Length: 389
Image (tube, rainbow, N blue to C red):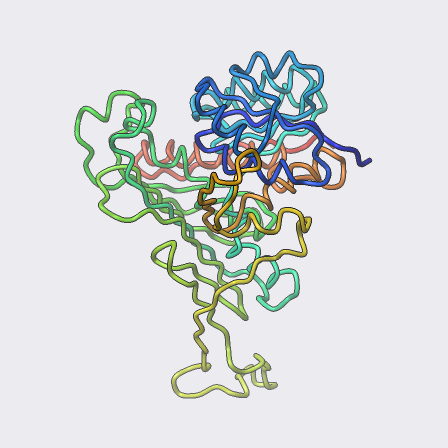
């Protein structure tokens, strides 16, 4: 089943960067932009020559011409808003995290099952050129079997809107854990997590969380391990979303900074063993490993040509005013890939990586990690939201 999709982009502070990829996607019909900030709606609408405009989610939900909604609103509203979109009979993509409680996760799952509409958790990291390159290495067999994974998301949220105040770091750990899910196609079944550091008292109250930083060890159902660190406060470090995927042929690791090129290590030999189970190229220092800084290419064959340009930062001329030029900025090139994933899902061409059940499992893992930290690092089982047979 393929047809054009009428999409609404709701929340333009973050969502504006997705608008051109929807605007020029060949399977998208009309684009509606929505935000309570009327000046922002005008600015984005004029920039991309979009005449369909709304100023509340209710306007979008009651519009019968809109087929699908991409929510890019603040995280405290994600659960209720996603459920409302599904209950209105519309497909839904939503920025991470899915929800902040297991009760809300279950509510969204129930709404999706009742509506039968597509739900997609719009996790960005798995659509970056770094991770898409890793997927290529995995799919082609070059990386071999995954042995270990690591993810980290470093950020300091002091001064952000009030709902961030004192938030448990693991509540927003999807950028660090999602690569492990997408690489293994597995889910985390148990976790041990510890809090670290001291957070000033006024940040404790909103969530009852004393930890500015948390580190967790997730055991996946395929028995690989993923080590995840997330920081939110008292951390004077530049913003970084980083991951390591270690295979038995190749290890890929992103840089310490988002501007750093990733490193790829691989064995120089072919890994052949002799009858005595000794490597044929074994030396006194072990197998020789090569190290290479690489600049992963965009996987442009995965998306329509009309949105190729939006994988890279560049200057854009306004459609309504040729004299109006601004910079279109993207980190990692994920915007058009994520948009294409959602449109493909809505038009019945594929199941998204984080559909309703995988999204629920990923979110449950993050929530369980904080539960473990609050219990002093207890070994905690993670609730599964398996798709019914």
